[in-house]
Length: 313
Length: 315
Image (cartoon, rainbow over all chains, first blue to last red):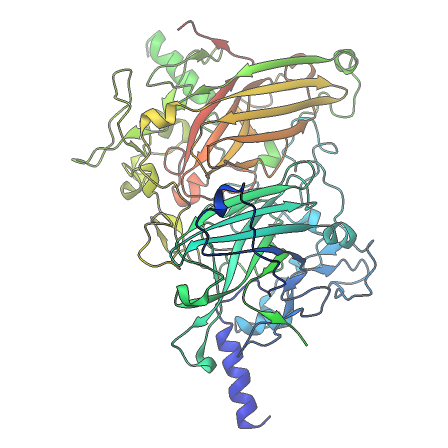
């Protein structure tokens, strides 16, 4: 590898150091001009954005759908694999993976590189776990470890056992792909905006968290830029789906994500992450720096909303 | 030890998990083996008889505590045992003031750890980090880093110094007793078939905030434990997020009928709706008091309680 490539690769890696999660672009629809909408009054800029189904960071069935812009480009990694009943590691998801495939935990090498880790830093016992069997904390003494068996669903468990809410069937790729959502970003000014998220057909009765992936600071040279996750709209950045897998979340914010100049860094994408451990972690998506709860083990991008990115070529 | 003291000790011992805590894994202690996989006559009876009841929730300031007084009796031997999980912010000292019937609605709510609760939890004053006590509810520190080390209070999203800054969702104004006590809700429980559908229709809680729902189970009929036990009602995640009005709907299916306590090992005594002041939950446990000192009353707070199989006291 020549010096330029080495430097560029290093820049990308360092740029992604804090990312530890999500991302994606703008297939934006025209502005919401519904005059009946209370939020349409005094609108400075608005957009209705349709989700894509994600299987990782900038990852749709193993393919990067978006160019995140320099220096990140089409960087992507998976946060889901296919359960491999014959081996210790999950199989990668590809466009050819059948809908019947059972989703499992995974830790993608690209993500490990970001965090300066190797496969040796991953507990193999936590890999290739079907999503429905991810251990849920039941112990007052080990809140941040991933141990113990997964919980049975309420129907399969004893009447008063600790269990997971129904439905608790295996999660297949086909079911995952049914998820969809619409995000309205309504900017009343450069310092006032509203996010209105409506999602459908996600996993029923389950916890999700919204987060933005930010690009670098505008004034920082491109090769020194750092991506960062951000709990846009403030904590709790969560929604819990109903029995149909539907949910909604509204938040007020003090900048316009559609206008990169309204703040000092750009919102590239907004993500909706599934919390397979039925637990959240305050203002961060997952505690990657404790106990090896890497991205892809306890949090998994399900929907991504492109804000300021372009389709990958 | 006189009769009163003996009774008090008995209550405390029996309630050592009432405060929604246990030193051991939940999964170990909660089984209901008496009916699991069986078709007892009682169970067969309610399988074919639909029972529907609507129970009104009560805004509380603690465990069986409304402004410092109990509102129901647990029954023997616990009686009207109660303790607060919120206090009143004391700007002039380290300890919050207790809430009572004369506390004004404008009083600012804060964290509190009740001494009775400490005994119940098997802890002492030394197990409390004083910096977590007498903290206004809106200023409870929130985890802000990937190592789970840096915890700090977060400003409201619209009052943050920078537009891109960790914050808490609006509204983020001070939480007063008056606002807290406006909370209400109904629990519609329909027993049908092998279990029951539970629908909580919650109103006027704190807007855009995190809550979860716990079933407090009484002592086991088989005598296998002397502790009450909380389980996530209807399974995990037992969480809901309120909307901008503080409203929320929570629906779950449970595998027993609360109105047929004879069909289960433990009675469902109450349903508790708990506010999570640090915007974080912990899976199938209420809070990690024993390893992080994050006790009930420090990060989690009973807000609405539904009396199911307890005796509501005359008001």
